[in-house]
Amino acid sequence: MKLKYYFLFLAFGIAALATVALYGTFHSHPRLFYMTEGFVVLLLLYLWLFYQKTLRPYDTLVGGMELMKDMDLTTRLAKTGQPETDIIVQAFNDLLVRLRSEHLSLEEQYTFLSLLINASPMGIVQCDIDGNITSMNPAAKQMMSPSVEEAMCKLPLGQETTIRLPGEPQLFRINYLSFPDRGFRHPFYLIESLTDEVRRAEKAAYERVIRMIAHEVNNSVAGILGSLTPTLSNREGEPTHPITRLRSLSAFVTRIAEVVKIPKPQLQLCDLSEEVDACRPFLESLCTATQVRLEFNLTDEAAPVRLDTVLFQQVLINIVKNSVESIRPTSILSHNGGKHTIQNNGTITITTQYSPSSGGDGGGLLTITDNGHGISSDVGQNLFTPFYSTKPQGQGIGLLLIRDILTAHGCTFSLLTDPDDHLTRFTILFPNPKIQKS
Image: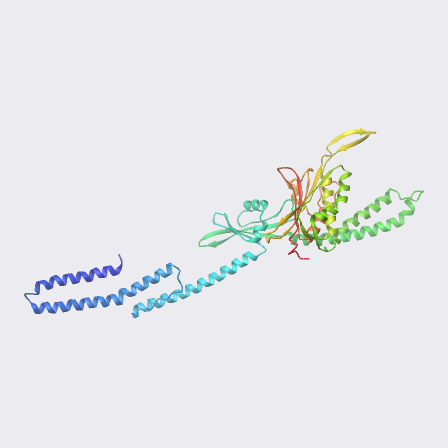
């Protein structure tokens, strides 16, 4: 029950008692009756004044509490005219001013922090106290993949790890941290892309090494060839095996040196299907010698891309060449004059698609699929690493060349073997040509 109701019950109780007392003295003591009646009227007037000075300001303070409960920090309490109460009202109004100022400051900081998180190139994943993901910024959404999620689940709190996505040239560093909030530890993940940083460091390192090796080997080979050619040539003047090996060594070093001389792409607007079709004769010649079937599934829908046609041909030829080498012969059909005829069931399919983007425009999606021996998870972790190769005589030049050219074009690409159909796919997604920088 509210305090004012207690006060009203007290006032009515006093009035009732006075009425009963007056009724007994009305006939016996008329003068005392009028004096008592006047006293009761004055008492009631005093109680009403006491209510105005005490309980009405109390209602004002209660209303202020309701304002705070509703988070109304703009309304102020009016002074009551009672000095003791007005001190409380003034303190309450000052408190509301400070709370509003703090509230605005927190809102501004929260807005700034939200903008900073959304614009950050570092992925930020927020979790609840149980470790369940509650939100993530746009950068984290782009970086998220099954491999990243798996690494996040295995990472202990307060630790960091570095992972390379299988079949992709993507390298990420993941930190699992926490911050205190209202007495609880809230965990969160920081995902940092190290791809560009590592690629620049790798490129600078292997450029220096390759230039040094090429310079020393070519100079040495040139000197040796100059002095040995007249001596080691046969009677017909043709070079012998040592000279041929030296020239092959020089050609090999020169080929490696070409990796660091990739020119800057001269981008022009093209249709992806038309550019793939222009490479058809070169690609067919690669497959004919090994009896690998080459199929084209080119879309009739326009798939606009910006690319350097010369560099793109190098990429496509290298990818198809790798696919051909991954396909093993399957059987021997016949013997013709002691020579074996090899039947190859290998198939390479080149597909182009129109890939709509979030902005309503579209780019091109190129997929090269083969049914070769596939790529294991261990090998997939090291793909696109400089000079890494699983071939006995491989130097790891092809994928390195492909990686650098596609990166210069701003493409997203991957090389993976699907565990369901066991097909290996090299997928290249070209950026939106309307927003791609030339």
